[in-house]
Image 1 (cartoon, rainbow, N blue to C red):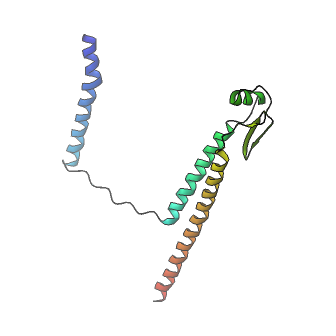
Image 2: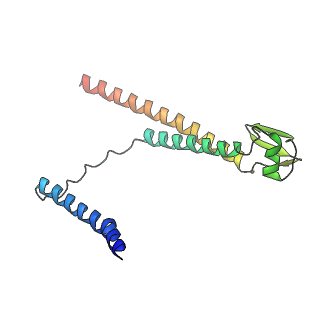
Image 3: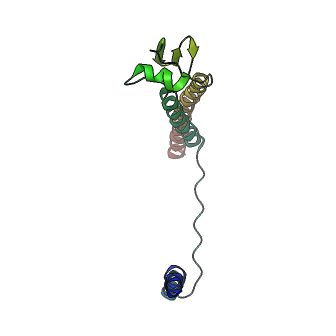
Length: 152
């Protein structure tokens, strides 16, 4: 019973006391004032948003491709068919792009992997091109505005 009480003191009371003491020290140092609010964040430009979309599409495409490659034979080709299709044989064919593994005439890789890779690749490339185009357009607009102000 004494061990249980000691454990409760160490597990609950001691950290609570330390936290209360720390908060008291911090408030004493600040003069008991409320914390300052954070300044508002700058809004992302459309080029930045497109770059984020492109980056996420590249990342998701890489993860999906690694998932598809997890079906591929690496060291023991016959094991790929055994673990994925229950057929102990060397695969009929396999390729990394498009992701494909054929064992005994049956495609083992899920049907949605390659269309998903295509959609993510198109999204990533479109996002990259859009981001670059918007950034260049914004730069040109700033340059034109700067020339007008310099003349005026």
